[in-house]
Length: 158
Image (cartoon, rainbow, N blue to C red; front, side, top):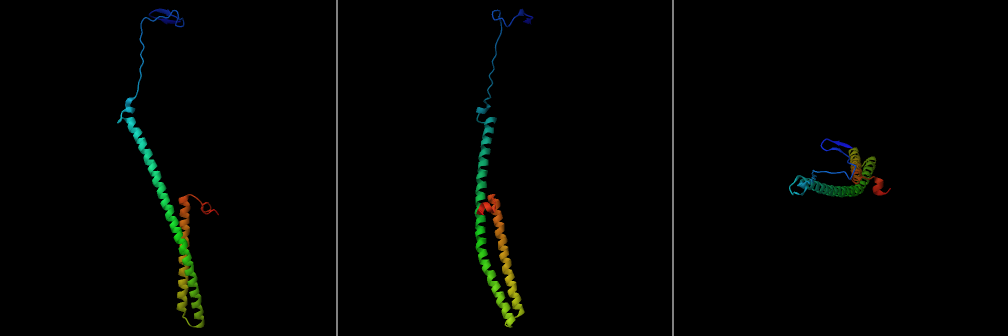
């Protein structure tokens, strides 16, 4: 039972005794039309999000192209170092043979000590050049591992 100061006691659970002499009902429907306006904030936010997705997609594409170019460059450097190592190994062998022959000639008295030392220096220079090229090759191989995010075992299957 509810005690109504205007009409007395009313039992709201009694269907037969329910009366309402006056009243109104109000329904409000709210719809944000801003989303449908072409220059509205919602449309701008949606367009900004679409633009951000396109920019991210372009950035990924550029990163892929840069990675491919870097890998191609490194492979070219590795091939160049490999062929240079072959040539430099032959240079070391030739410089060694020249040193040995100059040393033999010195022992027999046909060459001077200065010529022997010069031949030895050329031999050591050839060895140093070979070692430098090996270092360049190893550096390029490590760079390739980093670019591919793999180990040498993954790359070469060893």
